[in-house]
Length: 204
Image (tube, rainbow, N blue to C red):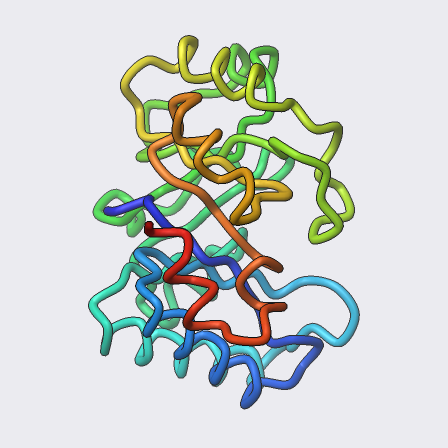
């Protein structure tokens, strides 16, 4: 598990072919983990979602990158994903099916208060943020800033932590300096004119 550059993306409002092209370009740029987050208007469902997720899994396997599914335990099991990422309002890590015992489990924790209420026994890494204001996630909450990120680093100790929320080429190094093991990026990669170059820019 390498959290250095964690790309999060979905089907781009149902356009699976275009999304797969973006994901491949990002993988070419050096993305180290990928999370399928299929939410919002036009999100794929049912067989279409399963087919898309299977295609993404094949693509990430080709590049040797862990494939994580956001929130959907059934989908993760059906496509034999490498893990799942869950939020505070999703299923609890301890309640996941035993199938996930040998998989990567990520948990979103946005504040010391949430951390105090979280059972981390089955968790492999924490996603913390939003560090900066973001438009990519409607329910992201208030930005915690690098000071909040540094506080979370102190509170969680050695557990791997990835920073998320409003991260750009201009501010990602501040996240690493605040103690994050890596950064999770959505629009700064997916919305770039040159996706491969944008991804590679986060690894310099």
